[in-house]
Amino acid sequence: MTQDIGRSEQHQIIANLTDGVILITPDHRISWANPAALAMHGAARLEDLGGTVTGYRDLFVLRYRNRHPVSLDRYPIERAAAGEVFEDVYVDVARAARAASPAPADPGAGETTWVHRIRSLVTTAPDGSPETLVMIVQDVTERFEAEERFERTFAANPAPAIICRLADLRYVKLNQGFSELTGYARDDLVGRTLYEVDVLAGAPDRDRAVERLKAGQTIPQMEASLRGADGAERAVIVAGQPIEIADDPCMLFTFADLEPRRKAETALRASEQRFETAFRMAPVPMLLARRDGFRLLGINEAFTAVFGYGATEALGRSPGELGLWVDGKAQGRFEREILRDGGVQNAEVCLTPRHGGELDCLVAAETVTIAGEVCVLGVIQDITARKRSERELIAAIDAVMADTSWFSRSIIEKLASLRQPGRTAPDARLDALTARERQVLGLICQGLSDALIGKRLSLAHNTVRNHVAALYHKLGVHRRSEAVIWGRERGFPAQTGLDGDEGGRPAPAQA
Image (tube, rainbow, N blue to C red; front, side, top):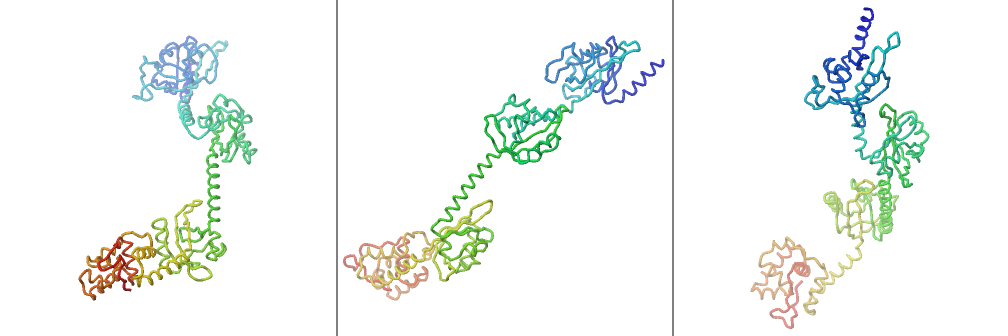
């Protein structure tokens, strides 16, 4: 009776354990199981475990973690019933298809599978014979599901990674990203040590990193040189994070390949050097400024030669602060156009060099990004000499066209085209002209004097002069030669012969 009371007390103690406990008699009956053991099998009562070792084998299908089935004679319960003492057998447990689960762990979710960690224990009678055979079960399903999720994530992660076991510093896992980075296959690397394939080689503080590795501490990011299967070395960033794999302390190494970045940096440096060389050696003035505020970041030698400002005086200041612009309103329009459109092409402006005076310049500017900063690159062409020549030529043409009686029409046309060649763009001022004013302008372009125009159009001399004055006002010109040029640029052709002319020579034009 005392023995029975003692066994009852033992059952009460065992009943509250989180580990499952199943008691088996020497004649292979399942005599008792605590609630934890029942729950780990989806059972509500002791009978749901099958009653005997054979009944248990009929109700539950066991597989090893490598998915191979467990033979009936190697079921842990069979081994425990035979009196064998064993440690840490891991198996997947599922109810047999022919066995209806009386209390499934997850109703409606299909077949329920558990992962059990099992060990055995044998109690003996005073005479040394086996008395109670014990199977102790731990439900490690969640842990293995987490490990499987980690395995899937580890394998699918595009970032190169490898896992090193801390006990012997041997590699136990690597993913496809690491294989692609280094050329190592799994069988080439798993089982080899850190000293054979050193993922910390070339790190500036390798000894300290190895100390942290052995201590199971996080290894911060650092640059290293990773040797691949072909012997080639690649610059990488490596970091280590402690983890556990199947209860073994390990280190997860992850890598970032620096080679693409280094190649990009090398190409960028080469590009910047080419830009700097071209900028410095350009024969025309060039400047580089921040778009925000237009403060100068760089000027070339040609800029210094033309405008007299050296780098010390110019850099950090805007063109306005240097006093380069003659017209502040023109400066405002120019800068607003850059901010609005991103650039300006061939704008005629007037600039003042340091030594005084004024220069007629042709300026082009474009927004560029240099070293991550939005800038404005400007190119300046000094056209002062050309403009002076043009003004002198225009004055000469004006003087010549004041009396065209000595020149043929072809010469008049060439003189007109020389003043502002190539401009054929439509002008809104054409729409402001009346039909009569267009007639008058056409005859002016043909070289007719006011008298001949009056004769051709049957108009009084004063009427013609009024039309000519209206033309000058609408066209924004001040003399007959300018009106001729304006009209010729917009398609008012001269004719080969005129009424009242001899030999195709036009009558003298009035100034």
